[in-house]
Length: 306
Image 1 (cartoon, rainbow, N blue to C red):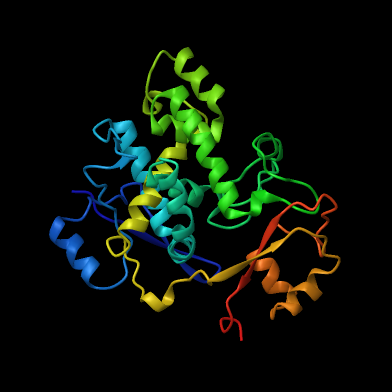
Image 2: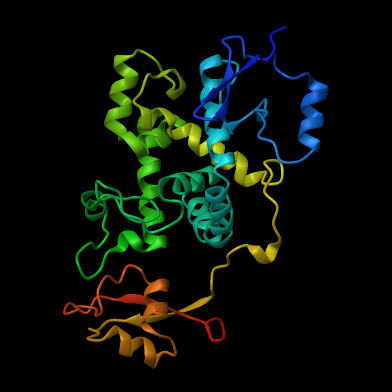
């Protein structure tokens, strides 16, 4: 059995311990492992579940490469505790909006976790310019009917962006044959995944050699699904009141220009900040609408911000 060997030397009056080359130790026994864990905070290995799936398509965990990649994502996302906790809180707020849209379109519920890894359920902008919860590029949004300009950007309209994602994913599933491949295509494109499957003469995402981002993509989705569905198993403890909640709103139909959104907000009993929180697709302090297009502006119910 190897043991820890320490030599001491004095440098500048400071005693320094030097580890020998034989400083490696055998792994702890099962009993010692459990004893250490019971004695307080310790970082310990996670047990990868025997069965994991994405959209009811099994992850082939008996393949050692797949097992290691899955283990990596579970470790990274479990031990980045602050981020995982924020995702848990935001999921409670936003999943009730996303889930019925996925269901209506026949998209597996697991795809809500794709939005989690894309944006952390925030209206962020990527270095490439992809925006919103679903990280939609400007050209893609415009080609699929979203209004995107300096005044209105519907990539930030959660319901409309989720519908666009559903349309894209259905098309990808039809082209590629599996939901797993469709998820990968959301990152690398239909053509990109199709070409790689053909060039490498395989039929499964899990058999592809891919770049770092796309190679980790589905594993990250599955890891977040596992953690967010089994929070206590992964050490996250909270009360219902610790979670975020979506504020109920009423929708006001607008088919006219609004020169001053701050004044509009005030006339509806809220301030400009609250108006923008609930309508992030309004990108300026006014609404240009010479064409008299119909928009629906959400106003929170009374009593939540007062």
